[in-house]
Image (tube, rainbow, N blue to C red; front, side, top):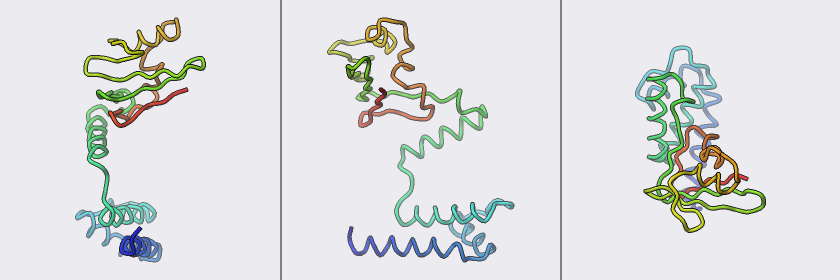
Length: 164
């Protein structure tokens, strides 16, 4: 890490540490300055400090990635429309994603393509059919590969899901 980066991080750490000693009214002023909006009326001191600290770090070090911003926007829209995130969110697999599942001591890799999946060098249309071939019993493919466990993730080409 360069000296300028270390100095920058130390400056941010000092600013955040100073928030604990700052009067409540000054915290509200800092919130208004950083967010360009009034903080909620009955926001606790702890939440004010965290919000101001986040904004200080975001400005100095960068904020959320564009993918995270998209996910947050989708979640907010779902929550506004349905008031229930659990039912509306599903994992979306993008071509190039790799699913790894260990079954009875054997590791299986499934690659997501535009048209379905590749497992053991063959094209498959359904994860459920792949899971049935692996286990010899009927399975929900997404459940077998652990895709139902995480309701807010999107798995892309550079990511993989591994379940044992």
